[in-house]
Image (cartoon, rainbow, N blue to C red; front, side, top):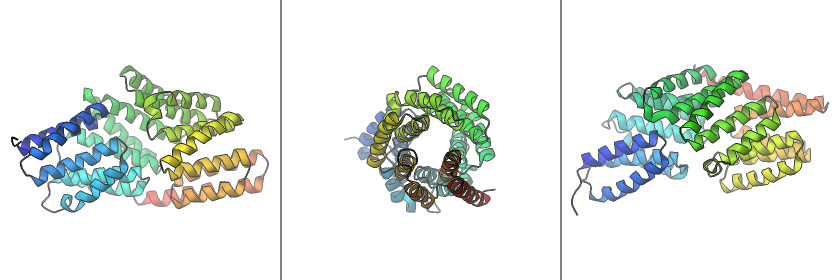
Length: 366
C-alpha cells in the first residue's frame, strides 16, 4: 500500500470542511468515507490527525451526532490547547466547543467559547471563517435576548456570505436569525418579510430543510400574534417536508403544533400531535421538550396547575430563562382570561423573575 503525503490529507480535510460549511450533508458524508480510506496510509503527522478529528467533530454537529462530537472534543482538548499548537487549531477547538455547548442549551458557555475563539480569529485571514463565526455568535446572542448584538452579527455574516455564490443557504439562515430577533422586538410585519424572503430563497435553490425552517419560524410569528390557525398550517407544512420530519427540529414543530391546536380548542388533534411529540422527545432524551409538553398538556387538557408549576420549575432548573419567561407570560394570560387573577399574578411575577435572570446573565457580555 503506497503512502499518502500528510499535506494531501490536510488539503482534502480543508475541502471537506468547506463542504460542511456549505451545509452539503450528502457530499460531506461521501468525503468523510474517502478520508477514512486515506488515513491508514497517511504519513505520520499528529497535527493533521488533530485537524481531522476537529473537523470530524464539526461534521458530527452538522449530522446531529452530538454525543460523538463532544467525545471527539474531549479527546483532542489537551493537544489542541498546547501553547505550540497553531492558531487555526485553537480557533476550531473553541468555535466547535461553543457550538457543542449551544446544542446542549448552555448558551452562556457557548458565548464564552466563542469569545475565546475570537482571539485566534483575529490572526486568521479567512473571510468565510469570519462569516461562520459571526453567524454562530448571532444565534447564541439571540438565545439570551441580546437582539441588537444578534442582528449586528447576523448582518455581518450575511454580507460576507452574499459575496460567495456557494454560501446561499447560509444567507437564508442569516435572514431567519434577523427575523427571529425582530419577532422578539414585536416587529411582526418586518419579521414576516424576513421569513417569507428566506422561504422563497430556500425554495428557489432547492434547500428543502431550510425551507421547512422558514415555515416553522413563520408559524412561530403567527402563534405570537395569536393567529393559531395560520400557525398550525405553517407547522403542518414544515412537518410535511421529509428532511424536517427526520431532523432534531421535528420535536419542536410537533410540540408547537400540539400547543396551537390546544389553543384553537381542537383537543383531538392536539392530543394526537402531543402523543407524537412526547414519543419523539422521550426517544431523543429531550428534557426541555418533555417538560414543555407536559406543562402544556397539564394546562389545556387537565387544568392541573400543580403539574404546570412542576414542569415550569424543571425549565428553571435548566436555566432556560427565555423559554420560562415566554411560557409564564402565556400561562398568566390564560388564567387572566379565565378571571383567575391570583394565579395569573403568580405567573406574571414568574415571567418578570425570568426576565431579570436574562438581564443579569446578559450584563456579563455588554
